[in-house]
Amino acid sequence: MAIIERKLKAAVEENLQYFSAVTVTGPRQSGKTTLIREMFPDKPYFSLENPDTLDYALTDPVAFLGQSPDGMILDEVQNAPHLLSYLQGVIDSHREARYILSGSAQFNLLKSVTQSLAGRTAMLELLPLSVEEIDHSAMSVDRLLTTGFYPAIHAGQNIPRLFYPAYVSTYLERDVRQLQTVKDLRQFQSFVRLCAGRIGSIFNASELSGEVGIAVNTVKAWLSILQASYIVFLLPPYHSNTKTRLVRSPKLYFYDVGLASYLLRIDGEEQMRTDRMRGHLFENMVIADCVKRLANGGKTADLMFYRDSHGNETDLLIPDGGRLTAVEIKSSQTYNSSFEQGLTRLKERLGDTLERRIVIYDGELERRDAEIELLNYRSFLVENI
Image (cartoon, rainbow, N blue to C red; front, side, top):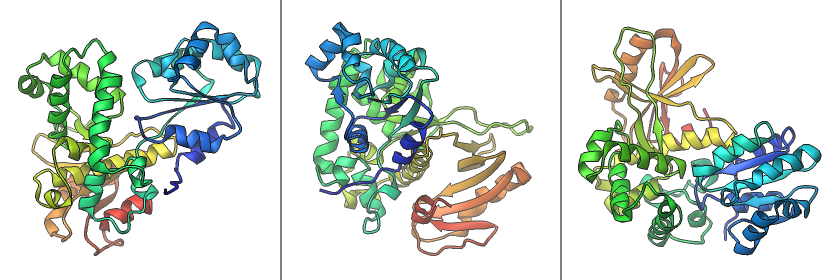
């Protein structure tokens, strides 16, 4: 069984130098428990999904927290949000103690943490594996897109054909069923599949409302559930004070392309090679990997895309100190000069604000010293350039 070194480890260690607690959130099966138990083998570990442990924490929180005056690991802490109010007092009276919290669902966790532990805990996200964290060298793009990036698969503990159906079933049964806003799980699952078909597209709640047969407000509520449980994220559009009319709606992406491929019923690499969604999934993989890179460094993703009313579009804008790097993403293995057209027009609109322009694709030819750089996606994602 492969051991996977997670890049978030450095951010956890750094934050514990300045905070009494670190809270690690992320989707189910992203490796949170494995990471924190490996990092802190000497700290007492308590899972609040264990009924007996949860009952003790709820009925006598003071005694529960008093078991370990030097700190502890509290896993799935969203199951006992009121425990955090007691933890606040313990932290304030035991400044040297260190607590590691984790949670899979943001529905109530973030609100509880920010209310009870404001200024006392760092908030970090452990997302599915990045390209840099896996043995990607022998994997084709089509295999990456169908395999996805969950640790259990890359550690040899499971296979995509079995993992993703079980993941969806568990997600619907354990997380979604608890929410009053979802009364029909089949309808919700249809909604999730329709979202997968809109990867890389402008999110339009009215369109989804008509296709699923639910109200627009329900679409928005269900989208919030998918965001809170780390199934999807929205990439916001670029805004400026120029006279050019810019799109104001975000684009939709999945945190894991393997899950998206399963929802799209793409069965294996052979089907992926010719599937109409292949280019969208490749774009999703690259953008999600950029989000993971920022999260692994303990940073918030502030990525954007560009589109104006004339149809000019660039897939990704990466801000850095007031300057922007523009990235055009193509799944082709063959370079075509047309790949640069959008970046050329973007330079005319953004001028000196645009520091770098990069085309990334699946080909081997690279051009790093040109005005518009050409890079293989692995170079861009793994070398952090």
